[in-house]
Length: 372
Image 1 (cartoon, rainbow, N blue to C red):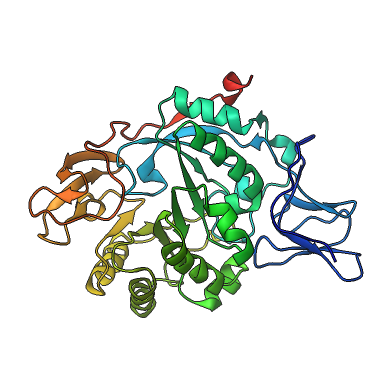
Image 2 (image 1 turned 180 degrees about the horizontal axis):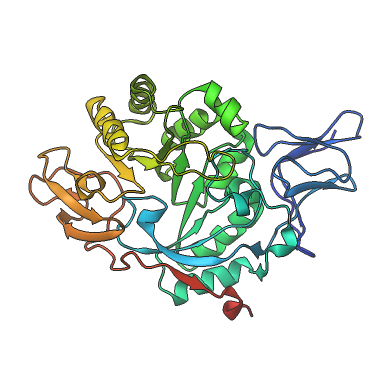
């Protein structure tokens, strides 16, 4: 029985790259994907649930190597990351496909796309790194759809970015198998992990996945890696917004990863296959943040709304505002390195001596201009 862990050293052809993380069944008739907990079983010609990993003549391939749905420079706070070089710019891109089936997906035209030919922008890892340097981006974000399903491409790009001193950010649901975790995250400097709810029932019925592997990834990131990470929880009315669930989730985060991992409560809007739900009331987000703080989390935020008081960073030592945020715009900044100017308390995260000045701009990038 063949078992492949690390991606083979090979060149891509026609957007196909030999893939890692799979094994052959005992009878040799199928390949089992070991990248994510779905463990898709594929006979020749079959694609996985994510659609972008395929059994081609008894070998596993990533079918979207070097293709993207587009590139855009964003503020790092949009990922969202509030404690990773605030105010700096990040070059963001994604491909197609996803290993979750969220009914509320807000990037469904990308993550659910099966029209790979529509991905009209070819981009090598080296071209992406050159673009990031040219635009003076502090980091590159692997986002829009989950980079775990295109891990080989993300890893190669992250390597190229590391070589030119550009940081790497994974925006992910954290749905990955233990064998693939270290290889995927070893070149990532930061991550935002989407903890979609705190019940197995929600994960199974609303995302067609499971909660426990995501919790395992979060605990692993804290205990086994040096990756800076933050957590996002999209609050959907009457599905994952109960006081009990929010309290249990906050308690688990405190126990598993500690009080200093930032938690972002994000507002839902109707989309994809969940058009029957209302937008998240502002007061629900504030209630969630209050619960998280009451349970002992030092940094909790609201997102997708305008709320300076609840989007800003407050010192857990003296209670003073130390980073003021109005949407994606940085205002007041009271840090000396990573310490509160007022009381000297260390603030968890990665900070420059002064915040970046990117602001709230969104700048599309033509990556073809950086091809060799």
